Length: 253
Image: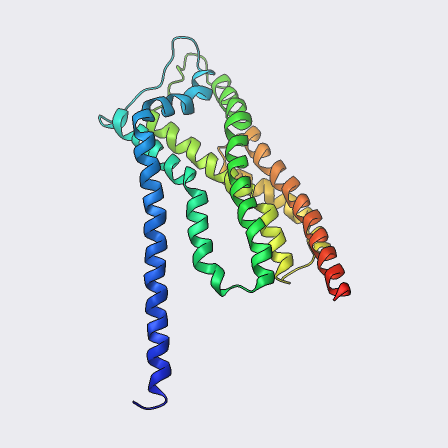
């Protein structure tokens, strides 16, 4: 064996070890989702009733949801339960991702990554909660009130699920704006002052993104754009604090 062959074999072995570890982490994440799914399946009908309650509260008296497809009464609650299982298992999924990536990070990067990881999970859940408790009642109330005279408002349960899950993920991802802002500043890609100078573009972009990610009504678009802008401002404030702490730490060294 020559001297040049040994490193190549070591690199190949290391690459295979990383693949094995990645597979192990993915299997653990899938197992967590499966366990939550098994635990939630007996309550799938109740979960869908809870999800549908903001819409049902706004429907005219005597109206109800409908199921167009034959298998919808079974598949729609199951689909909801599966999606909820993934959302509930997000902390485990993120931990497995962190455990796989952490060995390659420096100490300073780990100190920054841990709180960002926890904050990202919390902010995603906060975005979903904001959508359910604030956005849904307003949006569904608006949509049912603007129905033309003589039109009975009834929605298919499968279409409703697709609609609300899109809003959940839209608001969950939107609430990650402070994390993205801090990462951009921490990695040196930009500075808080430069981000602040882009404020006008961010506001316009937030409303444009709200038009793309939400239904075609002003209320849901505004309710997505305003938090996005406010969270951007929060990200700027937090990134200034981060830089200030970093400069103070460098001065004490």
